[in-house]
Image 1: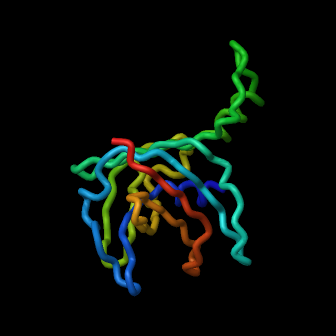
Image 2: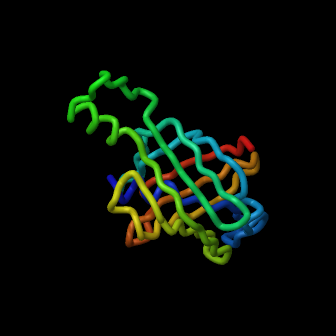
Length: 160
């Protein structure tokens, strides 16, 4: 799950026509604050299911910095002195990381170079996502496995 979630947060955007990337492909296309619209996992048979996270933000700046956060809106409030079970549930329902990013317009790939994360296993790793811009300006970030099959897609809408 950590690989999937880490992968989902990397974002890239382009419009595809005839297999070639066109439209915005530089940092300017990414710069801003984006709200999570949807997150779907895709299994080997192409079945789509909810990725479990239904709220989130991803931010990119013109200097190459980024930050991403996802959460489940069904998170429960903890007691004043949270138990280990409550802490575990809180940790398991939130994803957050920040770092630098690079774009590869030729492959519609964005790489998030993780510098800090809620999950310590992500620190000093690269999370790769493949982007596509829809005609309405939404950004789709796809996660692919080692074989190149898309295993998850996050759709983002610019809010700033």
